[in-house]
Image 1 (cartoon, rainbow, N blue to C red):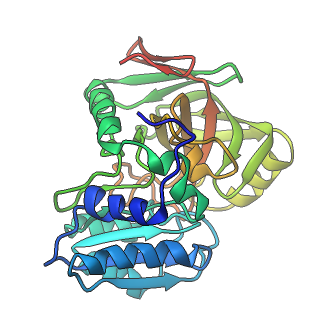
Image 2: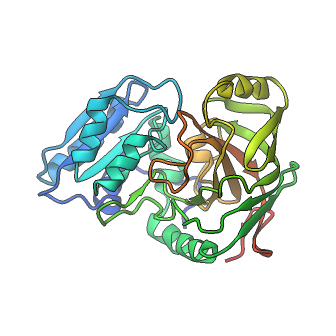
Length: 326
């Protein structure tokens, strides 16, 4: 697999995404969705590759959403459903939205999240060997199927037990989608799932970075009881998180546990790349529905990073101090 120092031209990364990951074919309709914060060079490169394949691509540029998980405009949601293939690249993710779930149900295949900054396309996680990552992800997903409990501890103080009985692992395609209704996200490199509602308990300690919060200078300590965040403690970022979720229906739900697999991913102020880093876990508060497998609909989906975790599935350790053992 790749080292974090690898750099690829934007044109090559765009080709890998459109051809190797999405498998776009000449007869298929292709929709690219970006927001106002996305570098225009990224959109131009992706549309250029799609046109080079003989397709007639459509680019929808939307206003940047207030939060990750907020729905795109209705006309864009309809276009997502109508497209054969869809790629969303936005600074506020539309992956955990009703629009994405409806597109998946309609048979659209695609990548419904991607990094918005130019350097994150040519450096780090986007340069990884996604087919090789998928082999690891398949093994981990197989171990999760049929399991009842996942426990996560970390040197930072995380100690939480998550119920997963009856839930299907998600996010293990590592950005390679070929069949109708298959969806994933960029950069490839995680296995994630929605915990069973009402089953999780313990303490999650978020370090370094969190969705819509940015850099975490003082760890955020989230107490979870019966699947809900009941207390959020820490410094300035914890206060901002409390304010962000206050009064938002479903925002205290523990909506995701994701295990990072990408050895080329860099940990920075960008959660989109950081949460894919090998040796990390991320937990999300908020939405777990929209085709993701959970039942809680929420206008927020906020990922928070945990560093160097030890992860056990039904008591079997599969990650120890950030090192994958499968």
